[in-house]
Length: 416
Image 1 (tube, rainbow, N blue to C red):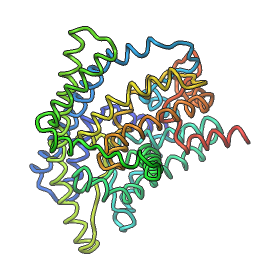
Image 2: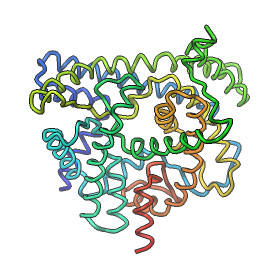
Image 3: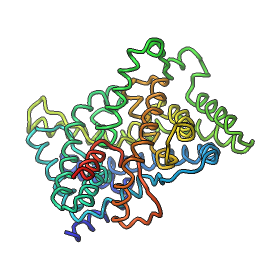
Image 4: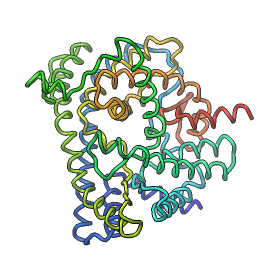
């Protein structure tokens, strides 16, 4: 069992950039594409994802001076916000990790072939989002089978949720033939965003605010252009955080570059996925009938091409930092959480259909609540983290441990 886990751990540690081309190539062959076309699709997807990673890193580095400025304003936090990479690594402590992934893939294939689901999950490197609750259950209850069942059920749930999400995902982002299977967002952040959005609908005044970057582009002329908006946002953020000339220029140009480059990288990625999607639908139609349709389950990062997402991210980050500084009884500074705000903004943009005001408000509320949830689950999270071999000197937690199912697992352990 440990050898199987090690094989999958090695494969996944290759990283999405290297793993995606291989998966897309194999899918292309399965769906009867020519070898040359399958190779081209795989490489194009890999190039697009590499571009996305570089642009996300550019955004992070552009915002770093502002984040550093705000982080120096507070002290006294007793819990470390460790970030998802460490949590993902710790989840591999589970002895069933390799078996769970193998079962998840096989069950996915069976469900697709029988027409019970239309989502083919290729987001293999994000299986950690299924493993984390499984590993938490395994560590807290010291039970192999509970951990395995939790992990496999999470992987199955992601498929059916992907089916439900597919149409809205395709319609808003224009990503035909795809859906999202990153379950922390599809089963937690998106439903939360939907709920807050509904609450905003019934609040007089707030429900009338409808500001989208598409409208800005129509009415503001050159000032509605994404590069200009990015530059202005970067300049304002630099001024608010008292940056020097060099950092001000770098932040302005960096954020403007992200606004322009992110959609282009998503476009490259889709250039590779589209032929595979078409081949998949053709093959499945022959086997399951003309109404058969197949959605390729992808990482939430596929939605980063939306301009509202980047703008909402750079506005939400300082607001979340201020929440950590001024809300009562906050026990951790949101270091790891800040890295996830760009993906949280994807969920808000999708639900609000590009309403920038609502996206920022939803993201801020979600993160503020998460600060408390992370702190509550920290004892159980720390136990799992230490069991996974990650060295921490104090209580630690992460956004991924504040999901409802992880909270339920931790609560059940405290009760029983």
